[in-house]
Image (cartoon, rainbow, N blue to C red; front, side):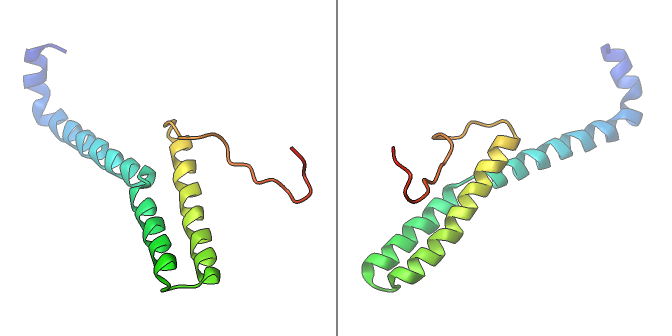
Length: 100
């Protein structure tokens, strides 16, 4: 569209453009929140520190670590859904008795 068309249609299309801009910003913030693993890494580090200082025992550490790893998997799934890069490869857990 030309400049004159933009000026003439601004009263009608302005709210549409503004709404689209706002929704794009909201989408970006939501994607960043869903794919940011920094707080999870900080939680894992804090948990490791609690184990080392004796604030929690091994059983509590394993229980909380499992919850944190679940959060890591959720972030990875969101990254894959959005087509973002993920560090590392697929996580595979070997079954007991499986040889390499």
